[in-house]
Length: 420
Ligand code: AMP
Ligand code: GLY
Image (cartoon, rainbow, N blue to C red; front, side, top):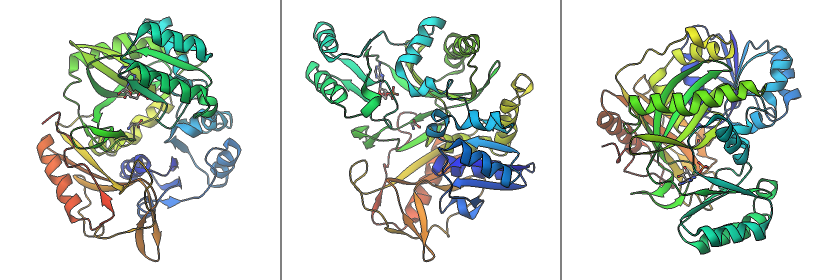
């Protein structure tokens, strides 16, 4: 079959790498793709936020299946446009993507389905929100309601920080995303991510992971999109995963179906685990980036069969063939990230890296210029390895990192520390 993947980061490189290994895949196009993806698939520079453009492209190229990587096209209704045109699609409708696009919507669904999560209040008016923070005190969590590229959440350890966050959000720093603010109870515990395919009715867990959000070693410094990840996440034991599925995920999926907006795609549940009980921090409606890289490394070619079963409503009969393996990915970023960073610096040594089912350097933000690979983003490479143990996966990943010649890049040297 002919397959189109939308997106151009490390997540989409990992999806393409897994899909490409499946004999069902004849032709693979990734839009827009990147320099690493171009080595294994065709890349097409089209506007992936326009449903009309994507549908036209699909018709012109006889595409049989579309996999939507990032949240922006989902929130923009691209999956709706594709399904309306009769195209088999992996990814939720815009209505179901509200589970990521609106924090207050997610809270409403948690209330309706009884899913455990932090207590909260919603505000559209600054004075009332300030009054609430003064009465409640810190620590407290302040969130812009809408999509804010991961920057709309302030975990305030002091009342002053919370009040500054309210100034920013109601002051328009996040545009329309900050017109409504959700203030939450601060939850203690250990965070982990749980990925579940949902076909609207049935659910199938496809792995757990833990990422490293802070830029610096020992989880210090500013927040990033993620500096590394590993799977499985030992803190998400079978019993906790079972509880999360029964108490959080299944009730959510049932409530979405009851509302006439069934969720079809991958649900990424961010969980806070304390005293053996999971609570929901947030949902995303797509694979995590870089969590997808470790999940795909472990799932391999079967990922395509699972996503097809999901899109065709056949999850009840699908199953994952797990190996007793571990995967770990190290993000290499451009110096300065998550602040201002240089673009266009050359990366050498990539050609000499091993590329097999145990080793893969996924590209997140690269382009090819005059035959050389150059960095084009903040997070640039996701150096990923698999092993029989997490330690082995980690040794393999860092051996690859050490073989990459990129003086303007950096990475954390402690990915996996919590689990090791
Ligand atoms: P979110 O974008 O909702 O995942 O929030 C970003 C990060 O903020 C999460 O990964 C948590 O580390 C933290 N966070 C969000 N909500 C809470 C909460 N209620 N209590 C503690 N930490 C939180
Ligand atoms: N790594 C976090 C995310 O994809 O949202």
